Amino acid sequence: MADSTQPGRSASDIPPDGWVAAVSPAIRPHLRLMRLDRPIGTWLLLLPGWWSIAMAASGTVPDGWLFALFGIGALVMRSAGCVVNDIYDRNFDRQVARTADRPIASGAVSVPQALLLLAGLLFIGLGILLQFKRFAIGLGAASLLLVFTYPLMKRITYWPQAFLGLTFNWGALLGWAAVTGALAPPALVLYAAGFFWTLGYDTIYAYQDKEDDALIGVKSTALLFGEASRRWIIGFYAVFAALLGLAGWLAGLGIAFHLGWALGVAHLGWQVWRLSPDDPAACLRLFQSNRDFGLIILAAIVAGQFIG
Image (cartoon, rainbow, N blue to C red; front, side, top):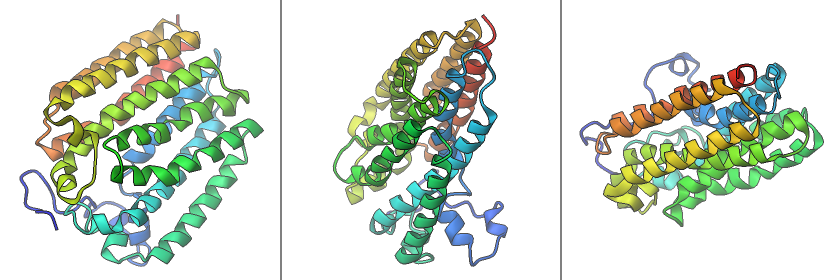
């Protein structure tokens, strides 16, 4: 197992306290397998969908029912993705201090139990998907190809973050389709924008594991870019910001959106300025701050429907 005593690194990425720690031991490993004690992944999956719903609202308040369905769907599908990831990675996880205590790697949840949980999550996800328009149903079902293949990418390419970007931003397409029953240029540009956002924030996240990944043969953009990573992240965020601004313009959003966009760009600049690649805890905090960034952009999109 990789050294768990590296400065700035805890032995496990599982929070020792919080609400999950207070539930029955019989179900606690399953909740941890679903990452319900670490909601940042759900937020990052959800926010592009909320952005798209709000952007497609065309001068009105975004549909609250769709917001709720996407919220539940993001929680369920992120959990399903975590189960798939941990089944695939159980042998890798046992070799890394940060992940050795994950439920499947540690034996707290067996693979058959995990597959049963996955089936239940996918059933719930199907129930949510069937609430949408026909085109959106087909589009949502197509995302399963990415959900099941993304966790394998770290084995074969130094760009698994790119495949995560394709997966986690699918909501930018699905949100627009759920509102309008079709796709349009703003949704396509928003999807492309989110792809570059994910390349940036997940490269920051990958810094936490760069030593362990190098030892066990797992690939990432953090390893690929090395000491040039900051410049790459600046580039990714710059392309994201430009495409996000273009999507807002194509959707006819007003000046309030562009003011919020500028505030969001400042937040991304702060992330790059504060980046310390050799401090895993600091990288995690910067990664998690993308939830706040995403909410800034959501507020900007909603305001842009009415102001300017």
